[in-house]
Image (cartoon, rainbow, N blue to C red; front, side):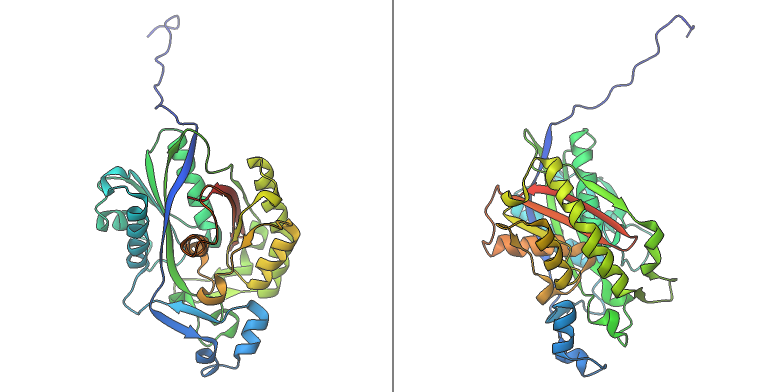
Length: 327
């Protein structure tokens, strides 16, 4: 090719104007650990736990139950509810920060076990903000033509990273999985993501190495979450063109009931049903938002087509928020 000849132009795939969530699916392990169960092994009580974090009980996976196992349960349920076959999914994203191993990816194994052939598949670790990060990635992939239908899963087995003698973490964290099926749409059903991080505070929640347990500076995280997150939530509403007063549901990461209630007050979403799944499910990190919303939909607490605000925040410190239309 000479300098005077035009350069070859690359072809891009066809794009779609928007995406929407077709359905959610959830999985909660059978084992229930109550506050009284914990009080029998450490210096705590039901009243102490409820007053500080708002949790009454949490679900804990069986010893031989893995992140992949739970993701498969939730993903299969979401696929069935969406009315799509495995062959119609071409992207699988698993958000998790509690995988048993780093290789292979959970997503590739989950896809195989669900009968999804040769999808794009990857894991994503943004800790408790992971589901919102993964949802944004799926939204972008579909709108730009890189995928047609995506399965997005938040799955965590936090119990295997918790020191069950440490009451600062053992009372909080739990296990479970939640999933969503995302597809293209003529009108947007997933609003613009507002995301970011505060890496200067990354040491506030961390696991030192593969032989260590999760450590959290609870008061520092509480102060950050109750001051920094409400403005992010408000910005996500503004970018989506939705007033907080128009929200039918507010579904923040289920970190701590006091944090959830504080953010909701600051957001002034007076007409929204505020998710409180943490009371009976504990803090399931990247799984908490889809778990909470799946339960709200199942109970008929929120109407189909109405706007809901999702916002995740946690280790990193990372955060992400977007408005969606409830399937």
